Amino acid sequence: MDTTSASLLLGIRSPSDEAHWERFVRIYTPLLYDWARGMGLQDADAVDLVQDVFAVLVQKMPEFSYDSRKSFRGWLRTVALNKWRETVRGRGVAVIGNDLLDRLPCREGEWFEEIEFRLHVVSRTLRLLQSDFHANTWRAFWEHVVAGKPAPVVARELGTTAGAVYAAKVRVLARLQEQLADLMVD
View (tube, rainbow, N blue to C red):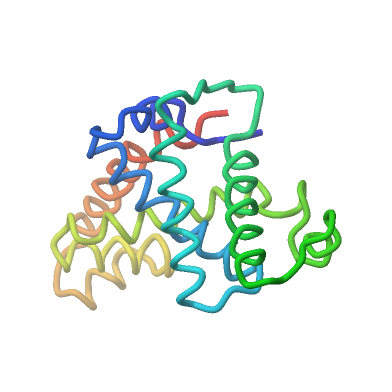
């Protein structure tokens, strides 16, 4: 089941929709980079491959038609693999059939399991949200929710009240839920 946001995909159909493209790039760059590194590319080459994939997407997305029955990430992976093949061929390495691809540690269906993708999106979104909150609010949230410390302990550490810790938790989780609302649909 693909949980890529339909509204995000519709938004990036227009190359001039900067808000949707910025969000898409911020979410998918780490994923594409991980795929590129999994294909055996060094850091600089992986960064280049990510850029090449985005260049293809800018060209292809205006004609892209979203089908919720199909996997966008599967299609995106195919685009990345095709750009990788071009890179390999450009270096004079023959890619015969799928022999080289079969030796990659990533096969279709087991490449990026749904739970891993969801964890990736939540983790990335949390990192992006951190700058939206005051440092004490973020720390109260993090220590209580992520580190699992009781609110009174966190309150003592931060010199605040347990109520303030709970309030930080509610504010950050509400913002996280808002950001993930259209990314985590089934």
